[in-house]
Length: 224
Image (cartoon, rainbow, N blue to C red; front, side, top):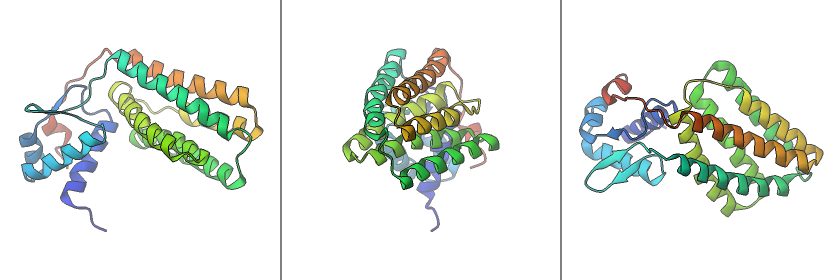
């Protein structure tokens, strides 16, 4: 099925966000985006509204759309929420995984490892977040999955904004160790692995959170 123009613009802006090409606080000006994508401002407005509803952009009345610029406290609060929610997910899954669940988790980790080898920052960020959502799905709690999905979306963006340049195999390696502990029914190790994993993700983001990068919409989307 062929993508619509709005879908292509949505994918391009999302990709730019996840690759860290847009600076925290940068304004996405409708006129500039319409020129960059050779489309109407109405189409751009719909895409920006969609991204705003997903929490990927901040929409301000009479001002426009902006890349989120979270404070250190904002970042810590979201990671703290993830720690609490995901500890519960780990406790629910530990020692209870069925064979298909184990296969799904192992296959996902392999996909993460392939993305690392390919050097795809955007794919690594996407798959890393999906691993945690897969755990929530396997736990069988739809409301928890939906809530975690919003938290993961925020932390994916924080990673892209403040720690965008390097592909690390840390996430896939840490995910593999967590799966080992879950399969073995070792709750203490599984909880420790999840806590340390999220702590490391948070620390990498916070180390760079005081920095800022200039962005130029024309150059970011020149080839789109």
